Image: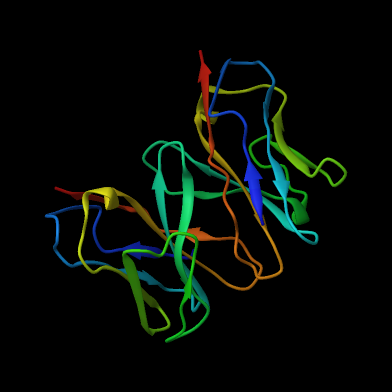
Length: 108
Length: 111
């Protein structure tokens, strides 16, 4: 069965601190990996897609196929990064599976 | 920019009522999805559609049905609303392997 685990429900850091939001997945085959973000009062949107290797708003994510992980990282968190983050692998059927989400709070 | 529009931002309904949630996308996407979003549970897939008049059950289809008569429109139907269907409902669309585009959501309260 396809499974996505985001172990942290809540992550609280101070501005300027490094951030790592964890994502582990269990998927048959080689899924494509996405991170989506939802800022307060905004709709869910794509933050990062593994295949394009873009760094968006300073975030990066490294795919570790051995550990089946796709952790999201940022070296220096900003207050505007406070949001809900969802990891979403997508298999050959092109149906994404979402994790339960991690709420990131960045304190001033 | 792709627009996914959900007809209502907030809805309040009574137990047993039939509820229609409407979603329209303007980019000719083949695939459309209905999710519900609950705190601590993330997004759970209710139904999706690959094409007009085609529908597939997601992870939690019980108590819901869908309709896709036109490519741009995907409706979610609660045949007889219950209090445990109080939730945020998100519609999304995409083409093939590309990213999802989401609507702004409908917060449904069933009293």
